[in-house]
Amino acid sequence: MKLRELKKNTVGWILYDFADSSFVTVMVTVLFSMYFKDHIVGKGELGTALWGRAISVSMFMVAVLAPILGAIADYSHSKKLLLTIFTYSCVGFTALLFFAKPGMIVFSMIVFILANFSFNSANVFYNAFLPSVAEPKNIGRISGIAWGVGYLGGLASLLMIMPVVGLVLSNFLNIRLNFVLVAIFYAIFALPTMLWVRDSSERVKREDSYIVIAFTRLKDTLLNLKSYREIIKFLISFLMYNDGITVVISFAAIYGTTRFGMSAKEMIFYFILAQPASFFGALLFGYLFDKIGAKKSINITLIMWILTVLWVYFCKTKIEYYFIGLAAGFAMGACQANSRAFFTQLTPVEKMTEFFGFYSVTGRLASVIGPLLYGEIARRTGDQRMAILSIVVFFVLGFIFLQFVNEEKVTNN
Image 1 (spheres, rainbow, N blue to C red):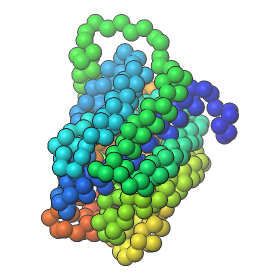
Image 2: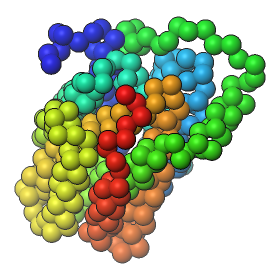
Image 3: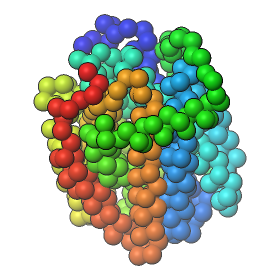
Image 4: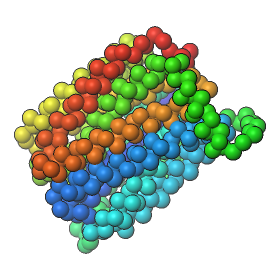
């Protein structure tokens, strides 16, 4: 499949991954996480623990609200409106972090929590557009292309900030300026999505408030879960292994600086190397998804994750950690692209946004536990290597539960 063969709305959908990757790459994974731990907090592993709490709180907020917002969006056909609102809310809060200076712990945590909440809420509605921009026969490849393009967006954002980080400016201005740059990057490159992706124009007659409708639909879904057994089984598996992925994303830079004394520029270079690996992982496994099936392809990625995390535990040198970054990047691109595509296959079209709300709840609930556990283990033991072992457990459990999903029982045909 060639990019020029894609429809305009499909291209617009794919480009959103390019835009929003700037936030998760620079703010969550690389720069702001390091700046928060080492300078805003600056009290050893207390910063690691507080960072874990900030991630957990923001994910809990998404977990509570995503199903309600998803039901409202399905009924009112307002996915596009809600995607726009949460996208530019994240942009605004990200820019506001420019004012986060050393010692401003409460301010920094509150603003980051709101930014990360907005980012993850936007993704609920973005993901729900997938079945309307891709055909069933190529949904894996479209999802893979989007993830791959997203990693290119992460790479572009890292290349954008690297010269600024290298400047010598007072009061960490060389760090804080990049938060504004990320906000601008996200805002500009999200525009094609807002302009080209169309929501349903069907008129919806409602006899009650959207909140009441949302709870009614959610109640109906919960009462009929037995009709969606494969989705539930997959969500349990996803809850487990997504926990591990979230911890890797949230703490990779913190681990590198704490364990190997890597500087901000070194960590940026580290993730610059990892982005192409993620890109090729997403594309290759998007192809494998369509060829060998979802379970087999996801199983392979989970085995790669288990081996990679064990490698981190035994890693002893900075150079070795760079190679681990390549392996983790490849596994991440492959696993995330396939998970989204598989869930879309399992989900009935008429409840797509609502079920992506559950998908988000599962992932975000997992994201409450993992970062909190990792941060607390690191704080109590004073050794992040011990916290690393908790990640392996989540990937192993995810692998085990995935085996119970019957790939042949697909409701979205």
